Length: 335
Image (cartoon, rainbow, N blue to C red; front, side, top):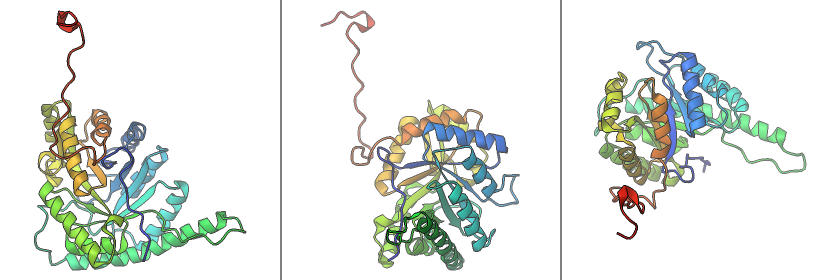
């Protein structure tokens, strides 16, 4: 049985916190936001391929390299459209970057470059089996090439007297999927599966299907990390969050945060993250409003994921506010 390395939630966090960098930005702005995230305690930065027919964007791999060069702690990853680059070329690119960023690189693959439209499908589309087979074949080329290179590096670094090192798996691999055929590929060949933005009830249904596919593949469901990419707009008030969301054109494509993402105040955002963590989400990837004050959103994100599932339950009442200190408001102590 192949060994997998699923993405866990970091200690003290409900889920690993990632930010999807906006490749509509200039290189300087993208690097600036990457540095903000690195210093603010974001766990991972992601870029993804998009349709070339849309607005001008930075090429995804170029954006990944720019973000990686300007950060030192945060993990970096790319969600790539398998139709755009041959698998051997991607493996060679990943090997080079992985050597420059030991332990920081992750790779993800999708059957298409756009955000899927509509809710979670109740009936699998006719093209789902074709896309799943293409994804599986692609991973079948990429993973052995990455593992082979990792094994070679480990062997060169090991003392001659030691036994041959175990075969490493290379950077963790993720598959983006929203239908059972894609979930089956993730269960058979990936470390993690990524769900696109969808309502909470559909996320619950998708996770159930993912676990079912793991059982069919004779794989422990706990060995497959489950992530979700969601639009996020949070603010000091709900009105501030609403203003940020309404000003972001991208949310018209992937969905409004109030419907398929995380929306509102910091407390409301944490409530949604608690729900996701109890469903089994271990990796949260946030698509943020591309606003001038995005640094304020980034600062609130890190507080949104603080906690552990066993201590925080969905819909649990908040702790009561502390009483006023002695003498506050002109009161005499003891009265």
